[in-house]
Length: 109
Image 1 (tube, rainbow, N blue to C red):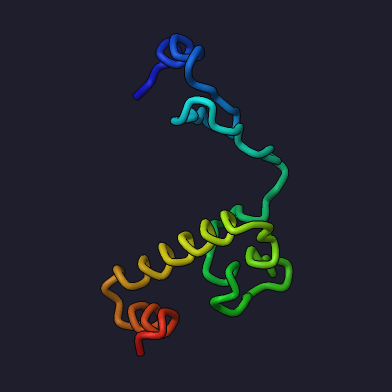
Image 2 (image 1 turned 120 degrees about the vertical axis):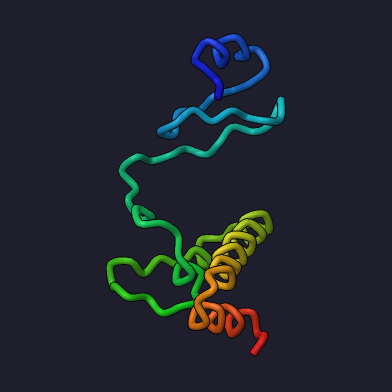
């Protein structure tokens, strides 16, 4: 694990952004991270399949649609990967109910 001294020594080549924890840019010259709003509590309990329109919303105040927020192909690809990871998480539980839901979402029924 990097210490603060290690991070300070690498500031010439690495950039850090305060998003609640230090995050190092792994690619020199890469664009900075987008602004992080600490007051945004939309994903306080995590990102779920319902945020991608793959499951019904449980609460009216949590009707987040990440697909509607996509502005470019990179966001679409990122959302696809996150949704696939969530589906794979269901498949890997070992619980038949969740595994069946994952198969249905992937069209493997």
